Image (cartoon, rainbow, N blue to C red; front, top):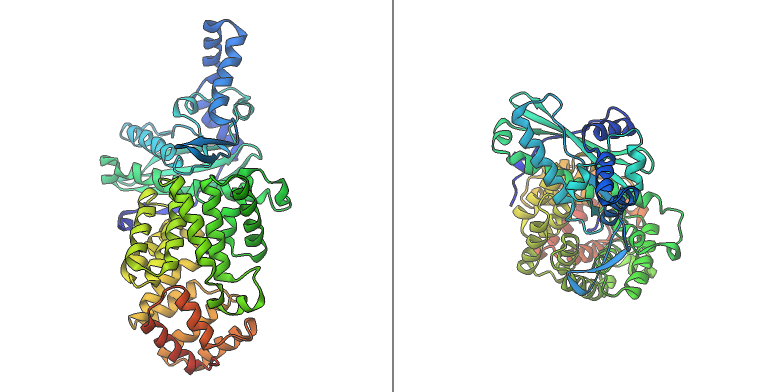
Length: 487
């Protein structure tokens, strides 16, 4: 909702769930580490028990600390959240050819998770030493680890299959589990290890992904005044993806308070900009006339751009900040400028499905149908079942504009929500080109039930707000007249 394609060789994705999280965690703890034994040795050298606890303090310092800290520049505030450890991926069948593959994948997952600035990714040397002791889960919790990523690589045909999962150590629940297929060539050249590691990390750490969604779920009954800076960012970032009016408004309230308190918190500024962009789309929390008329919400563009510009000035290399800035720039309806900013954002995290879907949509709407739709389609493939319905808009509208109406209607159905007025509008102007006028009229009836005052004028204004060409809008308006939408 918040608003170069190599997907032809992207790993395939499927779901894999099996043994309990605690059992799996203990299994990995047994296979890797011996941190307690290592700590005991360190303690002996350093002077007995005091050395033991000092080693724990070293590990703790990598996973805890101040909630916010300065980084990159003295003025920038970076809000940190949960600690994540990536354990070395195993090779259970002892296939020698898979050892380097598993090792590279482990490194890639850990390094790519670092692209999400709220996460505290535990250094690999410490992750590899997590204890095999019977109390290892408790030891990891004591060390300050919140989420644990584990994985294994097994032969699969001529290639390999990687099973990756993430556990919430506080609740003992498995948050996410996926299987990825690697080709024989991808194993031999190790290219698939990098690709799979990057894709998995983008899904695990995404804004929102399983970690952020789990943290967001814990905030549903908490007042904004009680939010920590990290909790505010979690809520504001997730709000932009839900489309819920109440959640969007609460996210805007929270982000306003945080940016007032911490005007140099780049992620908070970016989250606020995206929240305002969603408010512009939905009209939530605005006066009735602005809710009913898109052109009366365009004044929000100034704050959307100003807030995102400050964020990118503070943190130009943060992938989410760049996404928010590109989205803000799209309000200017300058195709070349927007394309340039969208590419910068994607380059920072090329396998982030949400960035691909959201930014691809905007690029397509502004007239670059090929690159925009390709980005959105890659996002859909990478996200699989968790892909947003809205990402189908780019390919659907591209097919419609090119006169490929059967495929257009099919793609529109992927993005169809019965209670969402835009779904009915899209069907109403697509179906007449297939001679299905009665169905188009039925969609208009559903639209007017949700938005009684909706008209062709409002459809025109809404699509202009998203920078569609006059030719596209004129063609759409003609079809809406056939479907019976009032002028």
